[in-house]
Image 1: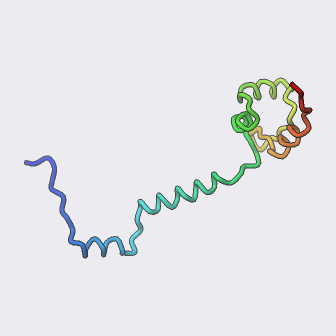
Image 2 (image 1 turned 180 degrees about the horizontal axis):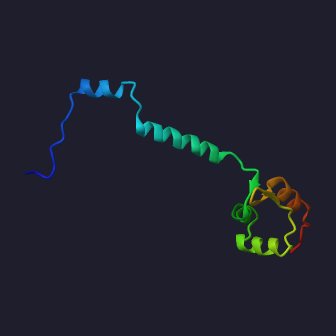
Image 3 (image 1 turned 90 degrees about the horizontal axis):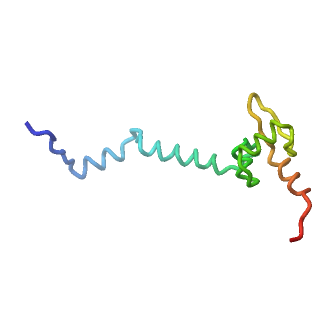
Length: 103
């Protein structure tokens, strides 16, 4: 008894009929949903969590957590439900107010 059954090939007319049918194509649905999710990801987020804030300003997220919970982090945060988040506007405002240094 063969382990693998031979693949049945369809005549060209049958393939065209199947592909042009109105049946939903799971592969195309997946591609479409992926493009929609990537479009959402391309939108600029306004609120940043610890990790995103760290990437944005160039500090380690753990450093931000340590300073924040010690009450020493200078950028004001907001608590939304159980999440601690920073408004990107507040972050930019704080960074713009920092003095420039001469090296």
